[in-house]
Amino acid sequence: VVILHTNNIMAQPRFFGSELLGGHLNNFNVGVDFFFVLSGFIIAWVHWADIGDRSRIGNYATKRFLRIYPPYWGILVPLIALYLVFPGAGVPSQHDPLNIILSIFLVPYTSQPVLGVAWTLTHEIFFYLLFGVILLLGKRALVVLPVWAVAITAANLGGSLDYPLSFFLSPFNLGFIMGVSAALLLRRHTVPMPRLLLVASVAIFVGIMVFGGSIQDNSLVARIAFGIPAMCFVLAAVEIDRTSPLRVPRIAL
Image 1: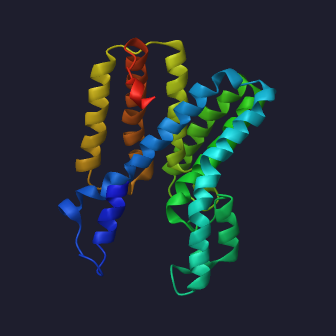
Image 2: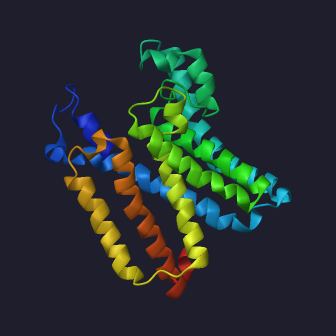
């Protein structure tokens, strides 16, 4: 993702005005797909025993809050102050009072948050809230995830969506569902030939990323194409760790 943003900056006329490696870096934003899959897996894996135990919801909410908001606010608040001091900086949406308020709490809006890259965190917060509801209602509530996946797929097969459906039914949300699915599979099954699966998943992910060309013109296809190998990578990596735990040097602990 950092490489992608570097490429976009260098392509601006005020800098070098050209894309690196003939535009092959344009698909590097798919690091987000892996991030969403990994996030869904970690939440389900770590809090599996908490599902249905309402006494654990406070601990869950506290951990999720501390993970996101303090470091995010540490960047956002100075940025908001900068735009207030320099009204000509940025774009109009970054000076919109409503967008500023919603950005502080990572509530989705028709415009990107004041800190543009925080759009991923609006999805993350929504997923945290949804999984919090699952914690309260119990494991039967997990059925909402495949229903959500079907709704996302069906809605996006019909064309573009308007806000707020474009957020709640965004193909990017499939990553969280794939991550939770990986956690469920690993709790019930072992993964055969995990090292081969690991290599294959990396090769497929990177191959599509570098040579996929315009695959992201269709967001649904792209999210599935990158989400599945990302999910397979998580399955393989966890299975390898279960059978051959990584030995961390004492000095690193």
